Amino acid sequence: MNSTLTAQVRPAGLLLAFGATAWAIGTLIVGDRIYEGIQTLDTVTGMLFVVGVLAWIVVVARLRLAGDGVTRFLPYVLMATLTGAFVLNALSFGYATHDEFPLWLAVVDACWPLSQLLLLVLGIVMAVQKRLEGALRWLPLLAGAWFPVTMAASILGGDTFSVIVSAVWLVGTFGVLGVLVAAQPHRLR
Image 1 (cartoon, one colour):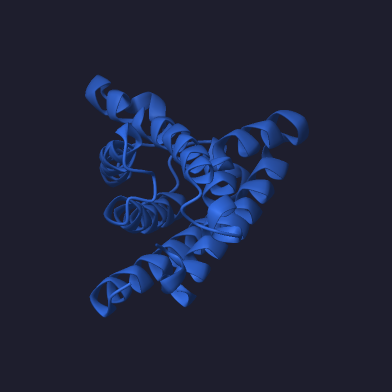
Image 2 (cartoon, helix red, strand yellow):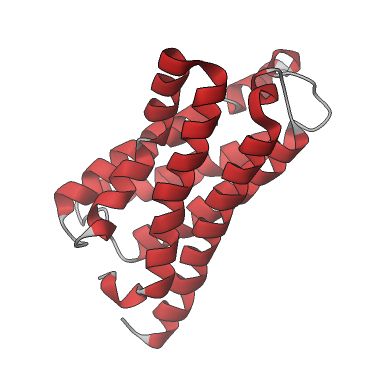
């Protein structure tokens, strides 16, 4: 990997680790109130998370870590849905709950779960492609499982348990992935 690309990969890894950690801390501080409506701290830290994930997805696209076939377009679709998720967060200030959103903003709200589903699909694709080795091969898949794991935690253990699982999963997958990418950019090929 050339030095220019390394200089781009490291900051992406740091942004991913920072965003995931910030959102995890934000959700822990907000706690169960996250289920009551729009919470400013959760919204702001959620935006930081999206910025970090977007930075990582740009690296994935640039290095073609999703493959060379039709799967190479997946990161670009993901960038669009993540941008929608960021816009949703930015425009949600001033609303108390999601139920207050006008129809057009409720449509944009679909970008959040869709982006999470696509992160899971991307994780599967990257694991199958075998372009990365060790933890770097499997962490995108585990990170992509955040949404179903958090939903399962909510069903099995309730809201408080779900918030804790979410925070731990964010740091243990996205956060660790970001640190590894920043520390070892040469392992991305």
